Image (cartoon, rainbow, N blue to C red; front, side, top):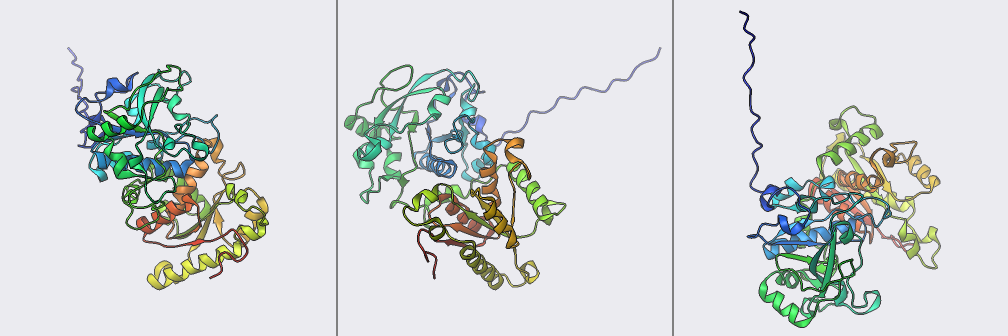
Length: 427
């Protein structure tokens, strides 16, 4: 009798979870209700956005910072398409940034809403459920805030119907500028702080379908908008001491984003492998909405010319030559431009300088058709961070974040160019 040999079945071992794996901070897979997936022994924090990609990134950094201050687990929402059109879908934070690497660096789990609640981003949308949160936006009654929470579309896409309570006046920074103290906001995550805040202000009616009123949740601390938050003084993001930057510098781009960016740079520089991508100076020129800030100043006098930007590029070239003798064989570094400028003549002038750029349009990488409308600005931020040097636009948060990444991640030389009136960058 012929006996047919059969290999022994081998069970695939279950993956070994690290101590900071996201699954350790929830009961299990995403559930219809967020409440059903929170561990009773843990406390959490989240917030919402609607200020554009870079400002929303800074807001999410503040969420993680307050999580550290209040000993909570951060639940980071997806990015909201406020700057590209609400007909676009949200994009998960973890599709852009490396969340497991961040959790390892912080030595604590970091969650996304997709880890907690299911059906986020589907056509039908997730089930709607009640939640009580704090509003920072309503703390300042002047101007457009009007004593109400900041409107955003992210709550609805997460299936949350929120009743807001104004944060107590003690959270306001004495310097003004509509900034709040991160330490004092974190105090609301403890029962004594919660008591103080709820005794001062009463919950507002929710504006969602459930029409309810409830105090801020104590297990899931949440805020409407944490962009205008500082530790010592307003607008401190560019300060060396800023603890928020200690968090932001650990938010590296997701491996897939880096692979896509490397592929595009290989084609731009005509090399075969990512190891062959030459060192370069990245530039970010913000024109789009800044043109509207020029007022009565003609655009040619208001926006920095390419010759002004080239002067700053040369300063970076010179600094790198002095601080890194022999680097790149002593040759000047290549220059890579990123910008939201749409005038083709301007881009032709960029090319005439011998500078490079990734063409996201149909005649180039056709980035939107391949990956979606989110990806041109996302990939530009990756390119910017890869520079050995960087030149950015003064007063642009995208430039500010890119500049700090180049300083921290690449040890690079950096400059900003000023703009707004004739001779603004004279120095």
